[in-house]
Image 1 (cartoon, one colour):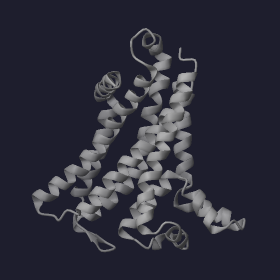
Image 2 (cartoon, rainbow, N blue to C red):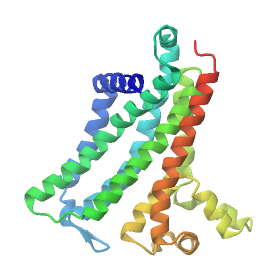
Image 3 (tube, rainbow, N blue to C red):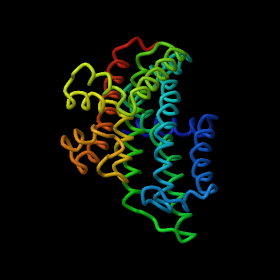
Length: 275
């Protein structure tokens, strides 16, 4: 356990000095600042006004930016250390492979989640200062949703990093995964499958295997509990899960998917040719 925490601390320290982390923090902090600057808290959409409106917009933007940031930076972790010859030194130190691998995951999770949460927290603190009502329920659920999203794509990124033999290959695979998930947003898959006379329940189930679709639908469910914007697909989703059930599913499924991917990546990493 001590080795795990030391590895996590080392990874956090390296990430804080990295240029990508500064850009990453600036992006999410800048998003919140711009949303306040453009007066988004004073607009009204579907009955949402004030900080609720800002959080709705922030979560939508984050779902497009966070996955690719997490994937691209994470896949360089194992693959980059392999290219740099770090494993040769690792094998000579009293650090187990498990402590090193999971320590890097823990450290990287703290680094990728902290700026996203700090930006939301900063928005809440500013809202309290200027007297804007804070929707604590929405803030808590969105925080949990972002935590699940970060865990999901961190696990996928570590799996890709453990499989790929080079940094270039790892980055290319990460971009391909993100692009594939992005292409199947908005239940695009449904049109093709329904034309092929596939049962709607099967089509929706396959579409919801996409974690990005789960995140987007869960975000919509907060201000549109009936999911009217999804059309007929909403009936299938609500019949399968219900509103509360789907909100829980949106937190559990991505987190489990990320854990499974990270575990598989660890076993492949442990059994592979490290040097």
